[in-house]
Length: 178
Image (cartoon, helix red, strand yellow):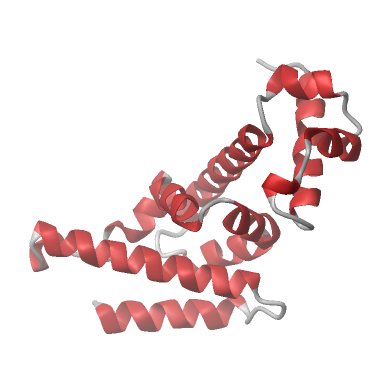
């Protein structure tokens, strides 16, 4: 278990990297610049991470783990919680967009749809009895990638539509597709 000093050092590094990622790509951020922004010694950085990519991977993992925990609570209260899920993603849009922009989108999308709570939301979208296993696999892939594209465009917009509007769009798509 990490002590308070380790958690603080890591939190400062994560905050520093996210701040720098708003300005430029990961491959243009030096360890020196990251440590200066985070006000952390380079030795401390290397004590916990081997590279900026390792730190970004931990930020992604932390985000997805927290998202999964939050969504499990939301879904437990209401199994058809599309609006609540979208509202939660809207609240987290800044970090969501940074991660999508700085991690290859296919990788981030795959990691996002691998978390259990997201799987629960989409599990009933394709009824296996209606399709062959092969058809269901491709339909799920289509739904996941389309959903991801809509989420990214919506959350990355300078003036995102209200959550209610996007929830209605997803509801319309669900009704039309299924």
